[in-house]
Amino acid sequence: MEAALAGSFISAMATVFGAAPIFFIRKLSEKWKDILIAFTAGIMVSASTFGLMPQAIKESGIVGLTLGLLAGIIVLDQIEKNIPHIDVENDSRVSAFDSKSLLVIIALFIHNIPEGLSTGFSYASQSSGLGPIVAISIGAQNVPEGLILAVFLINSNVSKLRSFLIVFITGLMEAVSAVAGYMMASGIQGMIGFGLAFAAGAMMFIVYKELIPESHGHGYERPSTYSFIFGLLIMIYISHWFG
Image 1 (tube, rainbow, N blue to C red):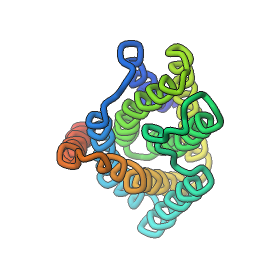
Image 2: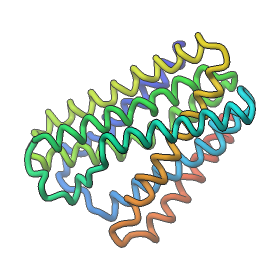
Image 3: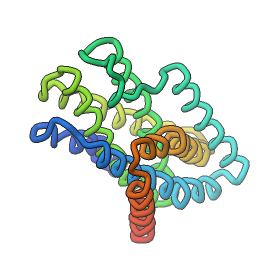
Image 4: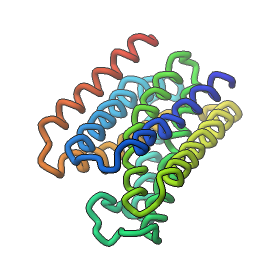
């Protein structure tokens, strides 16, 4: 339980680490945003493919993997339908901390829940190395997410300190959901494999629905592709290291 708490907290606080540069910069170029997002996508694909899904099969078999994977995709799909994606960088209508700004924050709160559950489920599994692998992958994803959210809030006329605190609160939501995922998986027989597959499905949906299209929409497809592969390889090396 202690390892799960530490891992989930560090992973969640990576969001805050990502937001720290806002005290020195105000604008993030489209090129670097796309590169960071693509790098994140590579990490999440690698963690799902080489970490979560193989362990889900070991825990619950191919049927458990299938059901959990589909559940994760469907849940994230419903979240996307009810809280539509907003292009916070290019939507000229967002010029102040209004209802659209609030909608973006709420959407990130909700998106952080399955990410936190992923970490909790992973630490509850029989594979001792899976928890750190998923925590690192989610943490790496949280760094650019925290930076992009903070820059968006500043551009929406929110003070730097208040923007930083909002990012901190969204990170805490992930830590809370990680603890909930760990307790849920530990207390319900057969829940771990399903939970791991659910986390993989949620992460893959985010990658293919949001991250890859977002990183290929501004003319920087080539560096974004290299960044994706680099992120994937980094996560493979980390997975190999934790064994």
